[in-house]
Image (cartoon, rainbow, N blue to C red; front, side, top):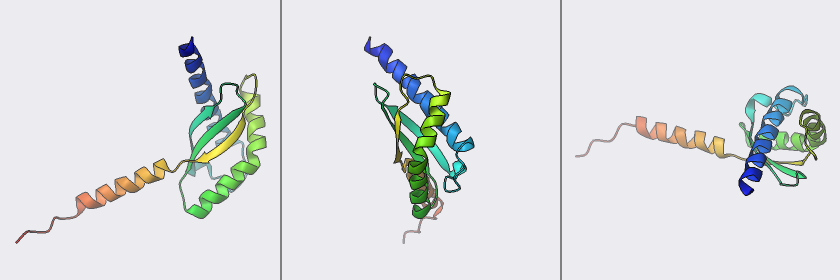
Length: 125
């Protein structure tokens, strides 16, 4: 029985993630939310569908990330209403946006590795 519930929650989480990506890309008109630089990485909904942690990644400088996070917080009511209109759920979860810098960190590490591998080793004497 637990396997069915976990599968159901995984499907709900994926559907919420997909719809939030669509809403942020096409419906939210706030200029502080730059959709090409924003990615919805994961949605983690509670079993009772009351709350949802939305993990997002924003590429850009820290000031821009902070402004985008503030804009998302202010637009969360609108985003939640749009989500309710698109999904047929018993409850539409309250959204909490959480910054996830793992993509930016991965890019940084990849750049460091590339820079390291292109350096010519010093000749030993």
